[in-house]
Image 1 (cartoon, rainbow, N blue to C red):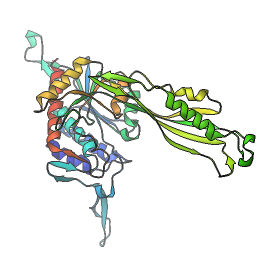
Image 2 (image 1 turned 180 degrees about the horizontal axis):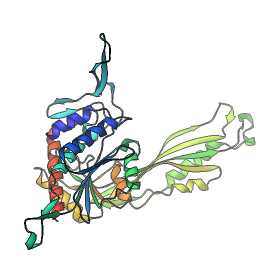
Image 3 (image 1 turned 90 degrees about the vertical axis):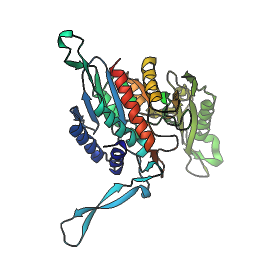
Image 4 (image 1 turned 45 degrees about the horizontal axis):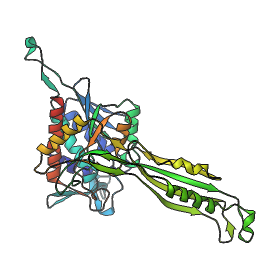
Length: 388
């Protein structure tokens, strides 16, 4: 089976809100095509392991997707529904191939990378000749190789967090999120850092009063705007990684308050989108020092940075050998499951076929040639890591 064929199969399986069928396919394929120890955990993550050793390398992806557009869903016949007059139907995701690309929900984000990782995992040889002359014909494990496809990445890393809490702790991981066309056209790079995202709410409370007697109340909107001014004055951190400056950001994105044109408002809420960088965060908690103001964190997706230069260079060398372009170590603006893994102690890089602007779109697609390239990168990276 080629990476193109495997990607088509995976993409056709609906996995928005319910990833069960896609997980079933991945699990069954791994059991059929490999002799690995394959497990399915309580939330639906599929994890396969082979080999043993002091260190583990994981090929990591996710098989959930965002909601498909109507054009990305097709209705197919599912056989008889038990009557002679009607035929049951089933929903599949549409997969279209044209101009050297596969189109469909999940092609770029990220079932194409999952397919490449499955094949690279199958092909990875985790044994090497014994160092003992007396056992020169024997082989011994050269390390543990792991494949993991998580659920719930698109809704805050549900699967990755569950796996980590359950003991998933590889020393190294290649996460197959997008890294293509970052340094230049038709180049698949290696991401060594990305931003995180912290979403929070500022709630200002006051005392309602009739607007004709404004002094009798405490205006919650005024308190909220004081908090907004404080947010605007905060210094946003940045960090230099791989010759690039990864800069955080802090943006007020929504405001809601008031109940009538003639009422002093007693409540106002402001939402803040913060893009975090490894090592530092803006001191947003300072807004809670203001009278009548509370600050709560709604979502906190961690950033990622690879601090193991040897591992990053190993994957970069594999990427360089697998393509005619000259890949680089780069940074990425989007949070991924690599952030959760890095926060738990795994050294991560990101390398995958998706290009900027492809994920989550109505015409999402992936290059077949780049899928084949990523498969070769993963194969080379695994071989180099096992031979270290």
